[in-house]
Image (cartoon, rainbow, N blue to C red):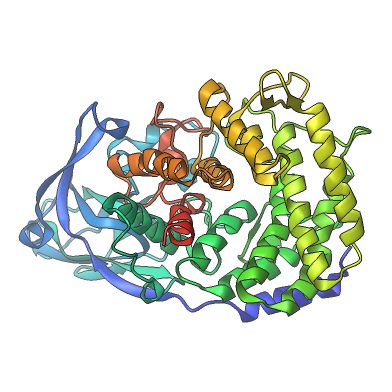
Length: 516
C-alpha cells in the first residue's frame, strides 16, 4: 500500500499540471423547429426556419417559444442579451431554457422522464430576470447544440427580444495541433476522423472527462482510450500525466484505484471499483511511457500500477481462472446479459503483459513473477475457457459465448495470430447473441481485428458503426449506439444518454496510427 504522504505528493503534482482552458465565442446560427419523422433517429428531425440574424429582432411574450441551432456541438457557458420591447417592464421576465445535444432533448418533455439516473442531469433552467435590458451569463457549463427558450411570463405591457445568444466554449485541447490527413484517406474516413477529434476536444477540460453533459468526471476506462486518441491528435501530454497522478492520489486503503474520481470541491475517489478499469492504470502508464519516455512517472507510479494487478490476482481460483464477486466486478461493456469472467481474465493477462514490458525495461523485481503468471493464466484460459468444438471461448458457469470474450482473448494474445484470425472469422460467422452495445466495446473489436491482421475488414467495420452514427446526425460521437435499436439506453430513457462521450473518440487513433 502506498503511504498517504505519497498520495498527497501525487495530488500536488496533479494540481501543478492543471491546464488553462482555451475559449472561443460561438453565436447561434439558425432558428429551427423540430418535427416528427419516424424515419429519423429518435423520431425527430430539424427543419430550418431562418437565420437567427434575420429573426433576432422579433419580440416574444407569455407562452411564446423558439429553438435555436448553434450548428455544431458546443461545450461552454451561455450568454443571453435581452432587451424589452413596448412599455417599461413592470414585472420580471421568467423563462425556461432547455439544452439538447440531440433535437429529441428539446422536443420531448423532461417531465415524462423515468430512468435510473437522476433527472438533474437533464439540462434545463428556469430563470427570473428582474432588470431589463440585461446581459445574462449562466454560471453553469452546458453541453449542447440546440437551445429552446420558452417565455413563461413577462406582463401584458411588454415583450422581450434577444439581441445576442452565444456560447463561450471551453476546452484544454489546442485545435492548431491537429495535422491534416493525407490525400489518400477517403472522404468518409476524413469525416469520421473530424467527428472523433471534435468529440475528444469537447471532453478535454480540467481532466479528460467521460462526457461534458453527464457524468462530467474522470473515468479510468475512458481515460485509457482518450489518451491514445490524444497521442495521435492533440498531443496534450500534461493532461494525461495530470490524470494519472490524480488516480494515484485517490487509491483506497487496499491500494485499489477507483473507477472514477471527482475534482470539486476537493479531489476524492468514487466508491465504484471495476477490476478492468483499475488494471488499465498499468496500460495507461505503459502507453504514456511509450509515447513520452518519461522515466520519472514510471518510477513514481509503478507500485500503484502493479498493486492493481495484485488485487485481481487474489481472485483466481485453484485452476488460475478469475472468479467474479458479482457480474459487475469488471465493466467490459454496457450489456447487462454479458458474463464478464472470460473477458476479465483476458484483461488481466493483457495488463500483466504491459506490466512485464515495463518491469523488464526498468529491471523491476516483479518481472519474474509476471512472466510466470502470464504463462499460467494463458494456459488455464486455453484449458478451461476454450471450446474446441465451437472454436470460441466460453465464460462463467453457463459457458456463455459473447463477442466481448472473443475480442479480449485476441487482444490479450492468448492464441497465436493465425488462430486469432480464425477466431475472428468464426466470431463473425456465428454472430453470438451477446453483442456489443457501446463504442467503447466496438473500439476493442476494431483493435482485435487489426491485431488479427484484418486491417481492411476493421476499416469496413469502423465505417459501418461510426459512419452510420454520422448518418444518424452525430456531430460528436455518442455514449451508446446499437444500429438495430437506436433508442437503446441502459438507463431507461435515451434522453439521459450522453451524445458526446469520450470512449467513442478512438477512430482518429486507428486512422492516424494505422492508415497514414
